[in-house]
Length: 558
Image (cartoon, rainbow, N blue to C red; front, top):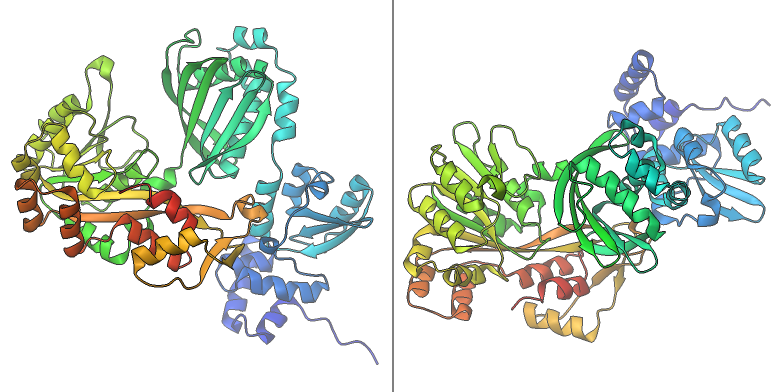
């Protein structure tokens, strides 16, 4: 008896009811006209989930399916296949088992590539199927630039670099390529900042990921001067000036996208240190609803933003996401019928239909001066990057009193603290209650990694803090066990904690009558404000973050 004919991918998907005949016919038509594989078309058009497709393909090809989100990539395996080959063929070496190399591939039927891997590694190859997007992510996470950066640094010729630093030739030199690799790795690791710090015997390179700094590379101290020179040239700074702090900005291409970098340099004991801020342009279009506001807090804040005039202030420590909140706020406003101006230091993201001004003290443009100049252009809304001094806050108050809506950030521990910060800056109580319409206080905390999330038992301290805040016993709580997708931290990504204070008549009366901060806060809660602490505990209860992260982030405030 002859064997039954082998089914093709389309037939199996129909049999498993994962696609309809109409969807399959449409996908085949797209494949004929545009090329590519049927699998790619089905996923791209949204007809089938990548996971479901992979299971069917594994049966067709008679190879195991590996979910890379649940497996650890072994460093010894990575060393056996070059990154260029892994990217070209969308594959990742996962583990060494005996004399075999387990390789997860987008196309395990690619016999020629399997034979190339066998020849390069000197081992038998066991091919498995993986989801292409997961494989590409695993490549980004596991092929680190350490070895290549070290090789490039070993070729540095400091004197030569300084001599040619203004030439186009430098773009092809080891120092330029090393800097590109450092930035590219930072982007892959989702870093917001790169710190290049000269130490006594080496150059320390650290990345800030999800708000936490971690060591990335250790390079020879001699690499510091050439790297700083290259950065200064890109940032339009003076390479001869080493003692005076400098700021600059440049763009660099990482893969297929352009990345904006903000630079700050300053002298340190063993040479100049540099901080590179990686500006993610996607942050400029994040909607308010994606920042972490609870539904109730979001509605309260949207109501505040509908105010025709007055002052809206966003508070929190450095790195708490105040600028992101302000940008998301002005993105909700009508930019066609309203005249919106900003005064920023620096301008981090560009917006259409908004006039943005950069603070420039040398040219006499300070926050206060820029605000006064902006008021002569008949604005409806003015965004002031930060209120730092009496001159700026006095001008902002005058703008709010004369019919403008003013948005700004200010440093204070919590929403009520903003009121007392304004008083400390010399603003009269009657002016505070006349101009301020709403205050947002915020913090950023890390999200539990969704790929290694597991239940855990809280510590006695965490349990006590939860019970005190929530007035209930703890239930099930979660934490990240640590996996290669979160660099074994247990966290991946961040979210915000917010409290929104609306200046009700009762709160205005309390401010005018010199009430204590605790009394005003109690009234704000009575009026509907959810505190940062409570918001954090709710997120822990919902499994978004850990109790420990809430204590670290939200319980640093009173």
